Image (cartoon, rainbow, N blue to C red; front, side, top):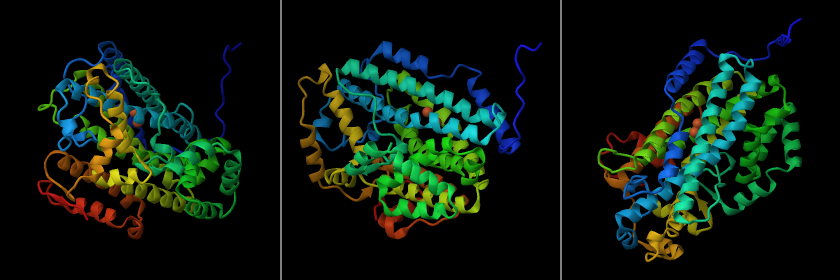
Length: 445
Ligand SMILES: [Fe+2]
Ligand SMILES: [Fe+2]
């Protein structure tokens, strides 16, 4: 008598990755975890410690606040600046954690639909999901500590990268995403198009015609729950796993362009050591995730039907354009957009951090009207140049990084950006790529 029945594998509907790819991924994962590298213990230590002393949690030039121009900000004490930077750190990683929640669902769905259960290929996305859970847990712990220390009432839930909140969005979009994202009618409609011949062409036309909010809502469905209603073969033919990982690649790039510079020049700045270790540890994990997104994303994309590849290519182009339109902006341009009723993630990151910090007893005699402050900044004279020093240099570095990584994917997928839609922002994108050295001022087109 056998105690456990042997499960016979069903006829194999799964794809197999290039052997080198899977073995490199697994070797990197083992190397990363042979020493305990989880972030939780650092989050726990930071929670016990609280916001201590004058040490910073972010480079002042990476804080989306005019620290060099605004007299109120300039007059903050070192201790107050440390508290403000801690609030920014917590708010930034709150955004990251909310985005990572999507990866839990989408990674596991893609693994199930593409790879033989528990094979080496399957385990790559499984391992990453386990790391994301560690990240989310840690970032939530840090956020709770900052709320406790400042006395701010702030929820952990916020927009994430995958629900239409790339860089900036219209308030109407945000409400539409929240109110109707779960309407089964839309889901049924999209699923029926996915099953029809020429359905992808019609779906794409609808996604373009019905506006950005509807496009993002459908995209969110396609990279996540849609696969649960389809067979493995259908998902692979449609390339939905590829779509997911390539969209993930775009947000990996967006994450890294901030996170890699958030605690820049540790030799010159007195950083809170635990915050620094958390930032470095997360960067390490995400560097591997970034590689997975690109390599496995492209392998899945290439295993899709030609019509599905064309559909994915177009959605990737539109998504990248959204990021370019929201990222290649100067601080005053972001201020202007947010004054015109758009929600700009960078601006709200600064506003939320300041609002949280003002709750701290250390700020009791430094209260300020935040709305008034932002109105004053919007009214200031701002040059249209990124200088090769301070925040200007960091913006140049970040833009160059984004453009280089986007070009990697664009050249693999072979598409052109819509210059009419992007206008001068595409010129900035191309200009930063063409720049010989970052030691010169970058004049904004
Ligand atoms: Fe993460
Ligand atoms: Fe990740």
